[in-house]
Image 1: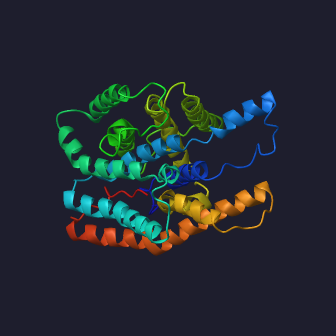
Image 2 (image 1 turned 60 degrees about the vertical axis):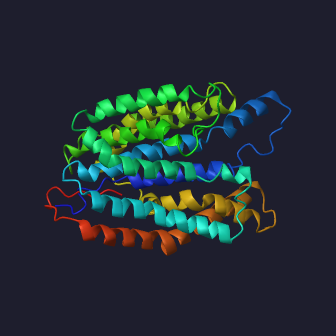
Image 3 (image 1 turned 30 degrees about the vertical axis):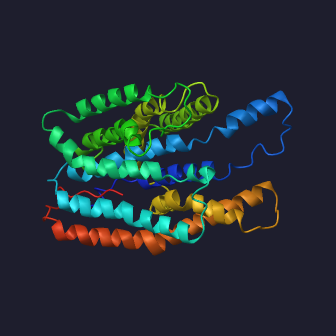
Length: 352
């Protein structure tokens, strides 16, 4: 029997693509429209839509859904150990975060510049930590309410909470560290619902694998919806605080299809490998963008310059993973083993 039968393949690939989306939006878009005549109407229309077509905020929503899945899936079929959970998850996220902040501070990263602060993804990481802290409480509430009911309540509260900001507010996180987690909680709980769905049949396909045509249509729909929500926000029509939670509802069936597909079709190894250090890319990309801009390299042309810039960010992220994040994972696993109770092999699960 396949020793990886409990591993959910493909999620690492998706997380890398999501992290890459955030990194590209916060640094430089591919120079596909560079050189267009800015005075012509077609160029203005193409440039206008293209500049908002790569949506980092939508990618963060994908992260939230996958995070909720990965947190809950291991405990959908075995007892929950509070100390094991906290020792592993909190260390796993906080050790690399603290190291990244220290590195950026020591290297002179312009942390007081608001343009750079907008590129640092700290708000979503703080929300993640809050979700980890809330998870045991949500499990207790689950004894009285279903996960679906908890999601529905959180979705309604977040929707009403969103109206405390103007309709055309641009940014999804607009409430500070004390409130941003609330707006994203229903997205995270969607991942918990997905884990419940898949956890009822660990190691077996809970859904029929979609056809290639349907899967690519779903992928295209997700990319298009992300671009539409981003452009509507940038054009001050309707903010992402009112659209991205509905976008998460579309992410759910897309991930159901991806999981079913990758149970039968292995993902590209290079994307799965890159997904292992997607968190480092998410953490370090603003700093990599800053350092790349200080290299003062000669101009090799639009496309070559962009590729060099992106390659530098990816290389720095991988080095951070090898030197900081991977050892942090080892320490987190070692700490969790102190509190772990033996688990029968037939119910053990492995997530990325």
